Length: 166
Length: 166
DNA sequence: ACCCTGGGTTCGCTTGACGAACCGCGCGGT
DNA sequence: ACCGCGCGGTTCGTCAAGCGAACCCAGGGT
Image 1 (cartoon, chains in turn cyan, red, green, orange):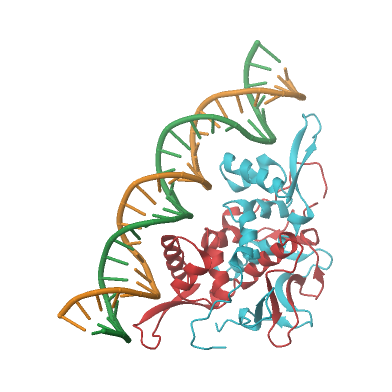
Image 2 (cartoon, protein in one colour):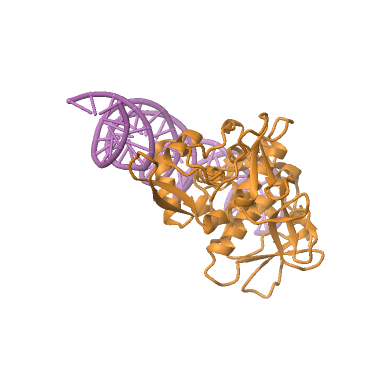
């Protein structure tokens, strides 16, 4: 396993890699921040623009892109005494990115926050307890990190499963 | 909660937001893919370059940046019959981003993989069971999504905690 | 008739990514 | 002593992306 041979990379098809594929959808600048705001309930263009401070052109591009990819839907609404407008709402597809955004937040809280409490605390709505994100296996064990995980490329008889040395 | 008032955004200090802070470190193009390779055990410049296909100049920039931020360390090594070289190894700080990368992968597996099995399967090293990432609260409940989470800005008496309507 | 607000688009400029070429070190071979 | 090679870069010219400021249009309010 910790062999000295130059075979540290599992030779799977990187073009099919789900991390790359996901980043192709949400990896551009501002996109994940737009989703963060969406998770906080922000839906309107102007609110997003104020919250993020992103250039308007970029914001429209990201929103259109997210709609095209099916993470948001553009829904008409009419506030009392106003004309019809549109707002952007999360779809299931978009909502399912919540763990990714929380993971980034959690890392920032742990390593970047200036040893105070984190800017935003997440609690379970039903019981009030703080929530956190973790890897666990189907047998119920907590998984501590990449070293406890074996990555096996599919479509091959698992000749050289990759377990990183660290 | 689902009030018609235009107050969908919790008025916390976005400049301190951990998602933004984290993305400032790992949000540039290629950075998270470099980390994916690191989690798979790839450590050498040439292997990274081959695996990713990124422009060399960009790759050196990202690696230097990750070292400067303390997610990787540049460690000298000497393969038998070769001169001394350097490789890039994860630090604790870097390893702790594993959940974020797994979250992205999991989303891609669910929503982007062409209804086959995912390109890369992760299993628990000790027991062989598949691993997955999930939010849970300190009381042990599984948290299903953003709607079951309450976000409270700190530094304020929680006047308007944000629980997104949808 | 005038102004305001929301959701854009357009424009010129700067920053960043890209690919191909080039470079320097130190090993092993001849 | 010299050659060639592989690793880990750097340099360069081109092209795409992000930026801020300005402009625009629809509809409502006054």
